[in-house]
Image (cartoon, rainbow, N blue to C red; front, top):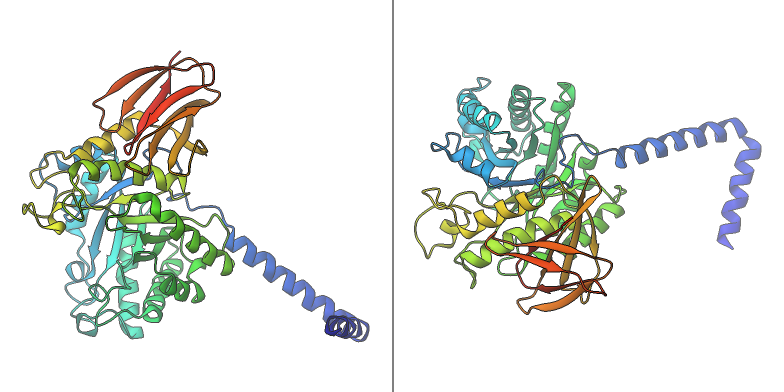
Length: 430
């Protein structure tokens, strides 16, 4: 009965003050439409499309590459590098900026057709004693510096990520504080807007998919300013496909915050060491290919693999062995997996996942100019045989490392395929 009472009250207001009611209703409608438009806006041009290899990249830790290093990154099929843009090394005096080291890096990127995802970080000893920004003066100083950096490299299609893993004590000192982070990210966004920069801001680059931290960012209004949400879905020893549940939870949170269901989610850092938790170099290579492919199938258009190059030479040190090449740039199996994937599916857009057999079977269909190709594997080490119905004729199959090439012929029920824990790439022959 309470609903009828409310309805009667509304009718009474309309009768007594029709003009006021109409004005209020119109204003509410305008606000609602503006909010819907903001949340359902088109993706920023810097967000890559789901086309191989437009959204694949690697983390680096240098501004001056070794001879031939940038060429080798490009040969792997990567199109992005993610690199820290350090506040303290580029503003050695207050208000005086020196980006010369990054100028050299950007020149090297340009020469090889690569783009940068620059991480705007960390604390500065000239402000707040080097701790993460906690007061408004430090936030404004950081925002001015970030704006100068973005202005210098504007219109290159770069991505600008505010901080790295601020939900970790190692990176947001003295301890994580989501409200302080959100205040910093908002200061940067407003500075970009005031400077007229149409650059793609992203964040918060959380370690794992930290829904509590993300919720605080969303409630602060950052979805209005960010071009995408960036997260680091590390799985330890778990296969890449286990990230699906976490992506679903994040999208549910985005919807509860009023965001469009297609608001971009980026995997801006995620990798596997080749010596941790029972992994080896071969499995690392399989996981790289599966992670890049799974992210595309999950609507994640950018996947940055951590790391490009081993950080050390200790064969037993986990942190030393995340690279897809060694410290001497010699390729590991993961390099060959990246190169094979990007060559086999170059220029092809992800279209759909075919449901064949059980949920552990992944058969992804890509297309280019109406011509399909497929990537197929299992998320389990136990192989299985499936039939892809509707496929006729002969097919060219390449293993994930490019070492095995087969000719397959479809039968009367379709193409019979043996799936293992590494992707294989299929192309129909004329």
